[in-house]
Image (cartoon, rainbow, N blue to C red):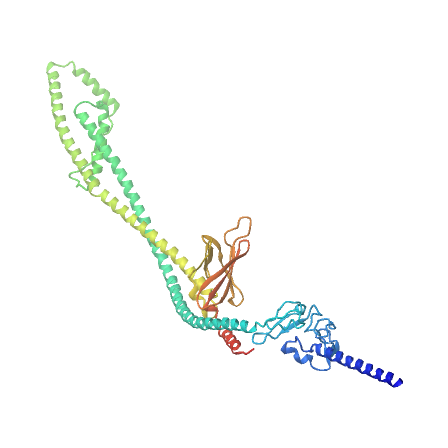
Length: 495
């Protein structure tokens, strides 16, 4: 009996020991490796009997790593579990590219790694999509390599073009500066010539006005002479003064026509008579009325003789006045009008030339300032962006056509989005500011993200905030050999 009981005890103990051994084996089998979830560059820190926390320097046994309990404040002891909220898990993604994700995403029932390594608990079965992603990545990389290769060839052409443009612009600036002073001198000379002609014109006008008045005076004197000859004018007391006026007029015209002294003369004005002598004379006339009859007949004879002489004088004087008027008409019609027309024509011609020269001077100043500004503008390494100066690029959208002119301005349809302000770091962006004021908002502005491309074009226009716009601009000018080399090395790398 005792023998049977002892045998039973031995069998039970054996079974118990066997079960413990089995459970221990299962626990060891389910325990994660300390290196699970660790990126390649940090694997060496997880080899050994102990582990030192990265942040605090705390040392723990290696068995505490990936035991689903957070021992390090920085979470570095739990790279393969979600025990630490600030830890990181590394997806190997074989065939694709590795990536780091937050450790709280481990075993959350969602496949975050393309190889499914973040869900090792078995809650969900992840499909390995790394091969497909790798195929897409290689295709995108090949396109990028092709874009950079083509872009670099065009960039070289742009650099060569920039050399020629720069040379031409410098020559234009030198020429523009040389033309400035001659233009100013020509304008000054034209202004002096215009002033001289205007002074001469004024003098001619004054002379013409004086001659017009003189002609009127001659005509008036002629009319008065005719009336005097017909006995229809004023009394005899005014005749001496009028005769003196006529004599002065005739003398003036003779001098103006340059007649000789034998033809022209100016009679000496008649001296006023002595009043006493006049009174004595009147007395004698009074007594003569009482003389003999013969004296009366003699007076009548003298009177008729006087009328006869007056008719002769009338004819002679009229002929002289007509000749003078004819001479005046000849002078005015043959000389003065032609001179006046000629002067007016010259002044108008000078005015036209002055306007043209002033326009050329304004254009010259504007062109000089524009060229000077261009030559000091940052055009990138080797002035590679210079060929873009003076060009504009459009991006049609559903509502508007956006236009961007490097180094100048940008528009949304006809609305200004601002003028070029500055480059971003390494010529990676361009800023356009001080556009049209928004209703109840700021002035419009534009931020252009510049990137390498095989052609110059703008795309992906956005308005991230009110009246603040953004767009992308691809250009060969920003392609560089270093980036192409990186792409080629990545393409050769086997994951």
